[in-house]
Amino acid sequence: MMTIETKKLRKVFGLIEAVKGVSFRVGQGEVLGFLGPNGAGKSTVMRMLTCFLTPTSGTATVDGHDILTDSMEARRLIGYLPESNPLYSDMTPMSFLRFIGEMRGLKGSALAKRIDSAIEICWLGDVRYQIIETLSKGYRRRVGLAQALLHDPSVLILDEPTDGLDPNQKHEVRGLIRDMASKKTTIISTHLLEEVEAICTRAIIIARGRIVADGTPTDLKQRSRYHGAVRLKVETDGRSVDENLLRALPGVESVEFSGVEGEKVALVTVFPQKGKNVAHEVALLAREQKWRIEEIGVEAGRLDEVFRDITTREEKRS
Amino acid sequence: MSRLYSVFKREFKGYFATPVAYVFIVIFLFLTGLFTFNVSRFYDPRDVGSVGQADLRAFFDWHPWLYLFLIPAVAMRLWAEERKSGTIELLLTLPVSAAQAIVGKFLAAWAFVGIALALTFPMVLTVLYLGEPDVGLIVAGYIGSFLMAGAYLAIGECVSALAKNQVVSFIVSVVICLLFVLSGFSVVQEFFQSWAPAWFTQAVSSMSFLTHFGSLEKGLVGAPSLVFFGSLIVGWLSACAVILEIKKAE
Image (cartoon, rainbow over all chains, first blue to last red):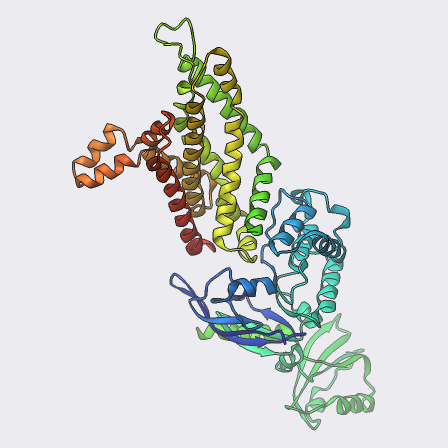
């Protein structure tokens, strides 16, 4: 089993404690999403895992290889895409990948095969002999990705892998990561909550150098106050929706009118008491009252709200 | 070892991927020619002072001074560029030790300077045509010049690891190299004599590039000078490794 385990990783830069004791464990097949505001310490943790930075205290193991005492072996297992996607811009994708491959100990036909495959996976066929400097941001990102995937690593650490890509490319890169995920241990960092929902099996939220939440995207969404809330879009047609009727329903905690579109439509959110499902009751009431319902749905919860809630609470605390 | 070679190859090709290599070689050859013929009056029969001797003293004597500016220009990019573009993170998270990367880069730069030096061969052909020079002396001069270039480069690489800015890297290495060139000069000696202990002044004077290059140039390919340049190279590259370890992420 390929696992990454960090034990109280800590990193101090001068007077600033960037990472304050981060411990977690990721196993094969998992795609761990690192979430957090800018400067939360996401990249610093990744840089320690990839042996670029030395932790001030604590350590981590990659498949049992300690990053401090057995760093070469740990590095061999990892494919890494650094945050700003640095590349040797005077090279072509072909010569760049050849260099990375050689540094990874690949040779001859094995190297050629891996380069071909990386170029195919990352759709670099058209530009393989073009100087990297002249490539668009999207293509450069793909070169960076190809570099990380080149040796078919069992651990993938990708710092903002879809940053700078257009929506189609984002979709494809996510597909790519998902397809490979089952055989690898993957850690990605991102600002994009949709990305977490799309590819991550687990999310860790970091704020101010600490892990403040750890769970599946579904778990995290359940922390949202919107989790289980019933949203209604009702045509008012002059008649108002009586919120007292909704409030009186069994299991309802509170009701919010979140807005009126063109004064003809009311947006109503009904919050249930903890653990209750009120969709059925709301629907029955709507039928009784002959409300003209345009939309009705139960919310799974909002990741962005949870994210904001947790990270701002953390900032206030410190 | 193969990783060291990969770094070497990439770095060496990197010089020729940009105009840097050609500009450097042209300037180096032009300046060596200019100083040798026009300033030192190499083999000039009209020059009364010239003894008309068939040797390359007039040519080699300029090397410490030319290297002083040209070699830091070659070395300044070695790490400063990696740091600036962020590729240092890419390079040092590959399974390669810092030592392999440092030595690989150093050897690439050294080989490049070696090529520039080798391209001065018409100078050798000229003296061979004009007279009967001591070939051993010429070989010794080339060995000395190449070794001295290595020492300059090692200083340049170490300073480059300190800086993110190539211009800063260039200027600082010129100044440090200048100290090594001048340390044999009396002005520097007097400066230290006034306050430093005698052994220190002695040590400073024995650190001079000029002294050691001079003895190699005279054909004295002896242990002291070889050890001097060799240990300078090893010392500065080791310092480079330490600096890189401390400062690589900044």
